[in-house]
Length: 255
Length: 281
Image (cartoon, rainbow over all chains, first blue to last red; front, side, top):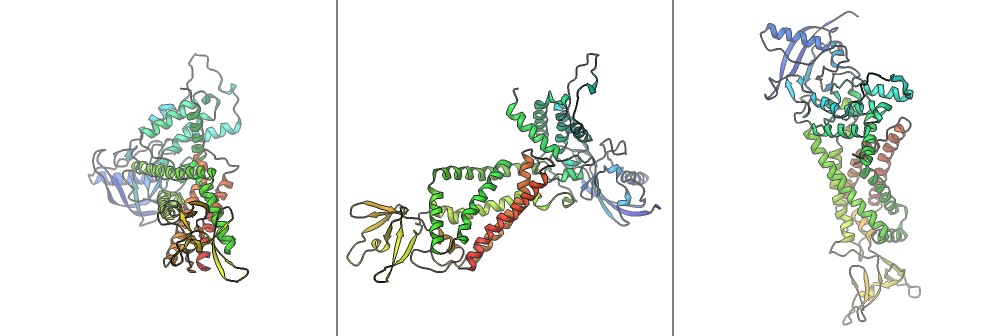
């Protein structure tokens, strides 16, 4: 397919720092290749801004191949833009037409404060993970072969699917309640499904859910938006599993 | 939310079955069946317990829903300048709090119109009356029916000229022989006539409430409330199962289908009752 060039208008959230009051600013950007990725388009805009001696736009990015979970961006009213199963770095300008106006905003959540422009602080996710998203393994030097514990294939597959979560925060960003239950559900599930994770299962789910609430995330009302916007296709089944885990743990935990 | 929601779904079924008597049993028989049913529902101890569970469920569902909504709003203090939620979620699922609030308003008016009148109103409810033709004279006479099946002539409650009435109604439903202070029986509150006149019946006669000019609005309000309920159930029914952790590919589709069928059929049947009552007034 021959590459095409389009001219676009961008409305982008600018905010000096976490304390400053931000606003939507308008930028014109010409000659954008439809083969470029959305982040490359922002690079192009930043080059233009730098040439104009203006402050470039801060945005998160790292691997640019959809696995690191760094890029975010709420584009035209949707997390990671107008496509499903992708992160923003996998979004290409061929999804847009010449003359389009594109809105770019940071994730909006009380638990994800804006650091600058489009960059938000997602360390709330790290704290949830630290509250229970691990298995304790003795480092005796005589590591047991992982495959010595049999795991049913379906459980292994489901745990793997849950573990595909990259913690990007699209679920929180798209949820009308700013709920992190898809993220926490995935992190709880990936261990709950495996024998190694069963040991700490009850405390894990209780601690992770407690931390999730403390961070100021909202509650799940099962609209299902997170599942659709998740770049890794994490299923709502994981939220149900977390609810089951939480119910049984809350009723039977001995600690 | 899920447990109370599902319990309230069961309550809806029970309430609907009771209401359907209004259209499936007609005439005097229907009036009697419905008033006897209303008596049972207000006097049976098991139903009493169930009714308190229902009140508490409604209160918990409403208050918890309200608190959760506030918390959820706080979770996003700065709204998006441009949002497209329709791309990833159904409309009813995003307006559950609003739909629920509207339903709560309806429940308050609904209870004020019927439940309050039945249970607390100082304005006494009309009592169930039947008109029976005297086999000899052919003259029609009106009787109250007691719940032991006795007939008490209404004429006994009205004095004639100098003669004071022989009987009187005490505590709203109890028939007393005035002179000897003896209880002859207890009548049925005529909720049937209250309902019929609320939705437009204009056969005004003794003991039956006045013709209701506002009936058309009552019917419209009721039908709209049922539409709101339908949208609330459209999302709520299946959502409750997910909240309880019941999500499995073997029955997810079935739950969703059952929820959506429930969301259409139950409110539709509720709504058809006042429509039919209004049309056959």
